[in-house]
Amino acid sequence: MRRKVFTLLTLIFIFCFSLLSLGGCGNSSPGPTGEQQEELPKDKEGKSQEEAPAFTLSQLGSGEETDFPLDFRGQKILLTFFSLG
Image (cartoon, rainbow, N blue to C red; front, side, top):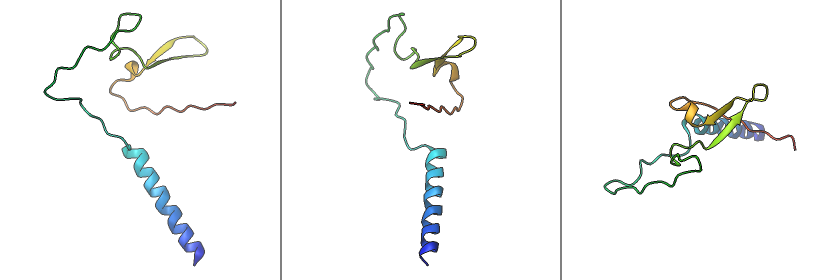
């Protein structure tokens, strides 16, 4: 009996976790409505922060840089970060 309850709870957890990971657990807001938004400050290259990349990824072999999220607009992506230390 105890094993069945544990198995059932495990299945419920896996199901709920998969729903959260597939559907997302956050929401997006378009911002205030009816109010004029103030201009965002610019970075050192003169781009507004809205257009500036959040971070840059470099390929180890070629050194080519990819600006995230600008180079991935409109695409679904999965980023995985890991550390050996």
